[in-house]
Length: 100
Image (cartoon, rainbow, N blue to C red; front, side, top):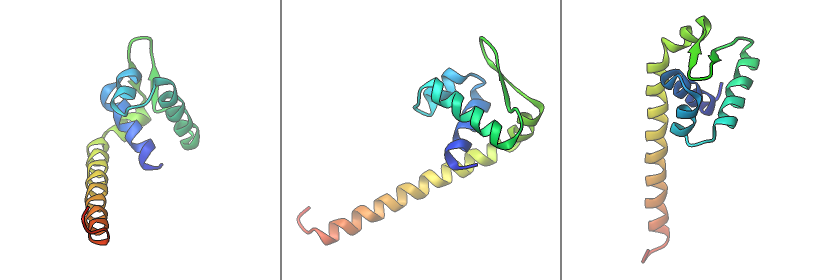
């Protein structure tokens, strides 16, 4: 499972609604649904059961749901790391290009 898939799982697990989860991760609902479906195929299990009005979490999905807070923290840490790295790259670029 890559970070993108982890982010998608966390969003759907917390929102329990594909449209709201898609909005949260800034993609359309269809690609999110396809990514979750592909993740389920890769894992060989169903994680979610979409209904007309919401999404239900399967027993296996609930097992993953217990670690969602840890995964969310991991995603926040990665985002912070990316921000720090981008800031350092900007500072290094400014040193290379005086007058910027």
